[in-house]
Length: 375
Image (tube, rainbow, N blue to C red):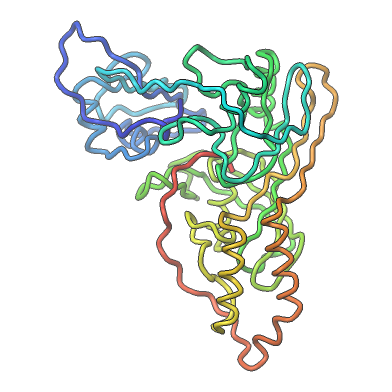
């Protein structure tokens, strides 16, 4: 279970020796992680956790490193297994099969390829116990491989955000799940996304920078160029079409971090169109004309989410080794908005010929959104 799916970390009460402890969180420290105090590490990994509460938990013996209680100043190192235990069990989530329509692009005995609609959460978790893609999958396909009886993400080998549309790969057999997970780990899965971003960019480029939970707001991800926090992340992009104030880009992921594309483009000053979490839900580039503002707001209404679609997926079949490639059309909301921008860009000179205004509007604070997917 992901840390974001669990309730806020509480300071533990006094416990007797006979009291049973339950594991609520478990992390394996990445190979590239530098030495870092465990209270800072845990705070960066758990949503809504304050450093003070983490220190209280450590003092009470509820934070373990390699099954041993440690103090708040313990320095985590690569390979450490960090556990947070409490005197009460975590909330159990019952995985209920639900007859929810899903778009299956491909299926065989070992894997399923889904074209997920925007607005659908991938798996149950805190605040989303039903109505997810996994609920639909277990209804339609029955048994899917699980790590254990409590696993609420059967068959999943990767995720995409709730409001991101596009291709998702699911394992049907345990062998396929193991091998697909290794393909992702070895970066042998080719993933292409299409995104509409604010502003004009070079024809192509590469965005780098460690990505981790914001030290100010645990519900969003930040880019840490120094590499002290977060995990290494690399996004390659090339321009597909320019519309003056916004640009359609193709993104190829070298890594797959939570909110990777969204955080990376916000970091370079080009947030995704209508991405309220990363500052794209306002006019970043354009004119001061009322007509232009109305045009942008109309586009926001047509596409009430961030403009991101997981378009293609390429990999070798985990059993046969046969090359597999899947492509998905852009969803209607993105198609409509792109067409509106295409028409506007043709005629926009009529809007700015008197003033030539092309201004950048100051950034407003980002709105929180629980991290879910890896893009």
